[in-house]
Structure formats: C-alpha cells, structure tokens
Length: 413
Image 1 (cartoon, rainbow, N blue to C red):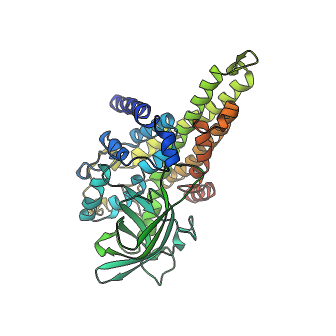
Image 2 (cartoon, one colour):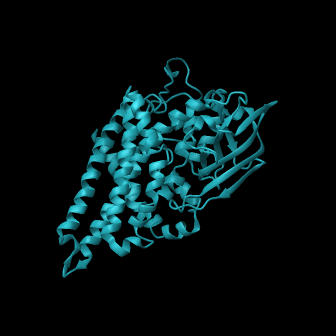
Image 3 (tube, rainbow, N blue to C red):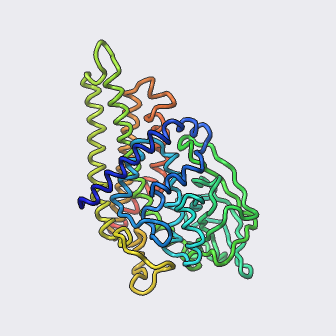
C-alpha cells in the first residue's frame, strides 16, 4: 500500500466518523422506526464523494481502488452499525454496474450521473416470489412490440424498491427459452405506468426501504436494453463478485462495531464489585471476537489486493462509455471493468471470504449481546441491531451453501 493510499484511507475514515457522529447517530433510531432515511442523505454522500467511488470521471465518478472503497465501507459499518442505512444508501453499487459495463453510452449518460450525484436512486431487481438463488428460472417477461418492451411479472425483496428512480431489471426476453440464455437486463424508470410497489416489513435493515414490485404491462423503450438480448444471466453472475467483496468488508465493520460496544460496556459495567472486563470469562469472550476479526481482516486485505491487481478499472484506467470493444472486449466471459475480470482463484476466495466474514459478524453479534446482557436485548444498542441483521448478510449476495459450491467449482473440484 502506497503512502498516498494510506493518507486517502485515513482521510476517508476521519470523514466517515464525523459524518456518523453528526448526521447519522442522532437520527438513526427515528429512521429505523420510519422504515427509511431522508433522501437528502444520498446527496450528502455524493458531496463526500462516496457514491462515485469506482465510477468513471466522465459519468461523475472517481476511479477508486477496492482498498479505498473497502476502507470506507468498513469505517461506515463500524461507526454507524446500521446495515439498513448502508444497503439503501449504496444500492446503486449493485444496480449500476451492469449498465456501466454493458449499456450504451446514451443510456449511461441518461442514468448514471444523476445517481452518483444523489439526485436519483438506483435499485437492482432480480429475485422473484417464486425463486431467488435459481436466477435462470425467473418468470418476469419482456416481449418486444415495435420499439418498446412490454414487461409483466413481479420482483421481491428489492432494496431501495419503494423509491428507486431507476430499476435494473432481469427479464425473460426469449419466451421460448426457459433457461439462462433467455434472460436479458432492462433499465426501467421508476415512474413507468403499470409499475406498482408494496413496502415489506423485515427482521432487520429496518431503515432500508424494501419492496415487492409488480410490472403490469410496463412499456420500456427498446433502447433501455442493457447489452444484448440473452446476455442477462452472464451479466448477473459477474455483478455478484464486487457485491460479495463489499459485503465482506461490511461484515468486518459490523463485527468490529460489536466488539467496540461490548468492550466499552465491559469496562464501565460493575459486577460483584469490579468491572465486567476484570472477569476472565469476559476477557476470553472478547479475545474470541478479536481472533475472528483479525483473521477476517487479513483475508479481506489479501483478497482486496488480488482484486485491485486484476481489476483494471479499479487502478484508475478510464474506459470508454458503452460496451467494451477491441482489446477491452471480454475474453472468456470476463470484463475488465467489473470483477468479471477476476480469475477463478480470486472468485473462489471472494465466495469463501464472504462466508467467513459473515460468520465472524454472526459470532461477534452473538457474543456482544451476551456481554451486554439485558441491555443487549434492548433496541438502541448496536449489538442488538446487528444481531437482527446477520442473517440477511449471510443470505444476500449468495447464501452460504451456494458460496461453497461456487468456490469448489472455481477451484476445479
């Protein structure tokens, strides 16, 4: 890591801490009760430069290495302790990459700058009521009529779904092909006629607006197609790599948040005439947490270094708008702008890291609640909130079981 990168990371961490202390913590419980945070927070995050991390300057972003992006993610998770806040505030990081890698230059200009500026909200729509992990079996259809696609179907568990202005939707354009090659990606405007939304109540991520979407004869310009017809399944698969790496960083930050709160409580809480931390059993619980945190940090640092080495875009290379052409064209299904360029070993490491990081988060949340005792069962503590948010982290972006199977295949087993 270069001295400049170290300085950038320190500056971002400092900015995150000040942001959380002044603009998040005083309002977080209110947002949790309301089921959403103010839209103005998107513009604030944009002003701080966080929404544009990893995107081309031509579209309003800042090419940024994974090391810096992950440092910001860890810091925000550790200081803020809210997965719901981060899930919706950064939902564009799963909604925009398909468009960035495969969309036309005109469509990119229409969508991406406003999202990175915090003026619009982006969401990814893949999961359906009838299936989540089995993406190739999705049933939402888009039939071509003249110069428009007509979309019919449903999507569920959509992060930022109640207020997203742009929806990146997986649809079946080849109605005769029931497999993965019949799937495409469409950009659907949030104000399209025939689109309806129902908010969903959840166990955790309470301030993240989550919705069930229904598409009833929604008409979308054919020019809103992302990539080519039939390429949607491959687009979805490469989109997962970066999401899983970011979720690993989030999980590490949340684990550290639990450790910080548990340690602070153990130092000030008195039991049997002495501080809780003076009891050996409590110190050992804290060290069990620390052991898992440090192993996760070391693994995350290693995988991040591999991702930065393999991802040309993360190094700051400016890629032309529109689908890759010539020497930038995908080879073997990889795209140098995505994480789709990562080799099988790195993809396997990301899958296994996500499992390890979320298990670390789960362990630390559990131990944090145990150390806090009755207070750990109360709303308003970070450990209680994170305890409720663990399972969505272990399922979202690819369930543990799928991660193990995908990793084994990438490693040739």
